[in-house]
Image (cartoon, rainbow, N blue to C red; front, top):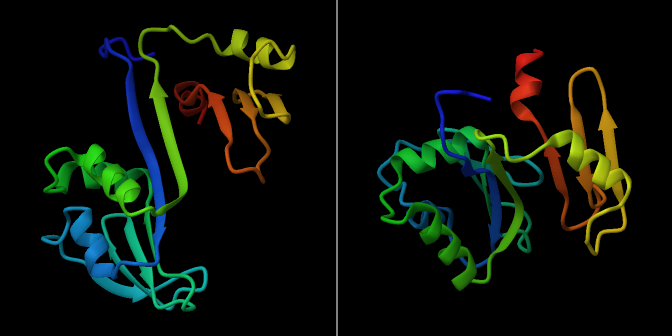
Length: 173
């Protein structure tokens, strides 16, 4: 734990969504990032083209049924937070996604525990003993020299929850 940080923090660490009703420019405007210097480059995963800025990609020109795919990595999320002109940043972009019935394809939410309220060993024991309530039938606890990791939900399912100590993992690198 970082002793200089006294509050726990929830951050969005990856966001990816698709739209079949918006142009790449409209997605960039919805992000509040029209003022940024986007570059044109090659797309991925069946998209021919991509607009790219600061670890944020807006893919387009795929098959007609693919629409536009926006992807923000962890660093992209930090850049979005720093550079967006949206007054309520995350609240506004999630409202745009919800109000337009867009499809979130990936959302990583990180809970940074700086006060020690989560005990990863206890969580692992509870998951392994199935002392939790969930509609997810698949679970896994992994213990290695690097970290303890708990996962509920199959990697192939729509929802996957993974809990691990990222700080411990970084200290061992």
